[in-house]
Length: 153
Image (cartoon, rainbow, N blue to C red; front, side, top):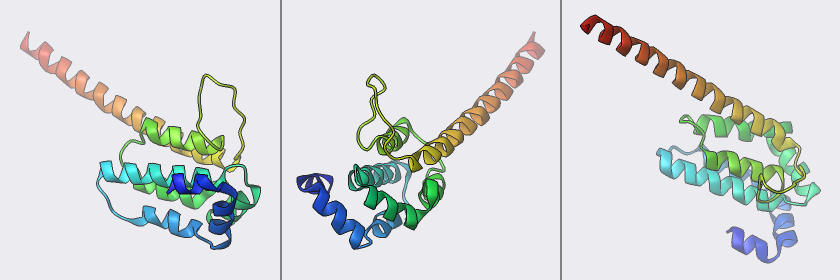
């Protein structure tokens, strides 16, 4: 789909914006999928939205009206959908939305979609929280193993 959109980006951006198709794209995230299929779907939705919103303030405004400032509805769907630890691919896709394309840490880039800042920070917070919980559980397990080992000696 993204390849077709790229053939005439402005035409398809306007078509999707005027046809209120953003809702249909985002609603794909309402399904129940296993982790692998779900992650692929999330990535495709985010990458498609990136192409549809890139360099088009009217499309960004229409999408913001649909999902809220900071893309609150999209954020809720992503965080619900990503009950597992959000992956690096997900973070990269969100960073791509932030810069209206592909984010490259080695290149100087400009934020072109400020609504994505809040989305990115909240997903990143979930990653940090998940890592913190995982590390705490690992530390408790290690401590328990050390206690058991010391009892053997």
